[in-house]
Length: 340
Ligand code: TYM
Image (cartoon, rainbow, N blue to C red; front, side, top):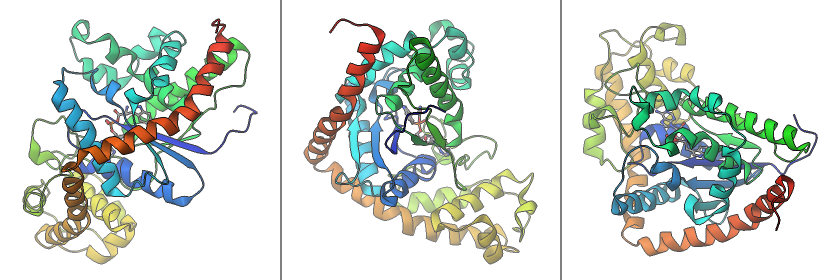
């Protein structure tokens, strides 16, 4: 740990690379709202549009729409622009500027070991963009340009957060300073890894070709019901204790989703529903999911009908953000020896 005391500050981001899924909501946004409302932290939440262009070509209209829709998703889920700073990454240029410095701190070997790089680049790494390779250094900059102390994320981001600590440590060591904090990942709760509804061994993802594999935050009640009814399960009844879910990934996933939506522990869900067949449990899950998600999708649609309001919130967020990021970048440049 560093010796300096940093303001308790939360930063997290989501890529506007496609629609928002139930995995993003339960693993990330719902937790962002909790941390905002705890009152312990300053909270900064971000649409990472610079990250969204690293993987595949996105046409400009789609990127613009995705970014606004993601902002609508944040607000509709309870992110309050009066309490949190809500920004679009490219509107706060210090992210990319610190990202460059970190490109020169991070080592090729570290980046090459990132499992998301290996998964996304696949067998044809030669054809992947340089941005995809450098992605985790920009992510470290997103966090450290705020001196953020805590980062709530789903389980799949754990390795990137370890790299963020490695970059902070190397920078502090190379320049003999105690400038960047060693950020704590916050990966907690029953929904840190929501799985596909079609295959309990795969993460629920906006990039899965099968729309039936995920619940989108824009799905209406009918679509939610259809997807849950068709979700893959096994023929056994639900157990009454968590141990009974071992080796039953699909059953575990549906119980986890229920627990996260109802804000209950896994044990309590099994106490109430243990012994039920999926024919009984699934309708209860449909009712709960529709009750919790429909108000969000309706509010998203309302906000999307007047996107200028979203743009205004993001412009104000960028101004507030730059009050934090500009001095931190200026100090970084000074430490590095850039003549100012
Ligand atoms: P992204 O856009 O893939 O996902 C956004 C957040 O949603 C979580 N998540 C899930 N959680 C549970 N179950 C799932 N199936 C699931 N799918 C996604 C992710 O863990 C993440 O918390 N690299 C990041 C974006 C990023 C970022 C940052 C995050 C850029 N800079 C700085 C934190 C701090 C990403 O690709 O997330």
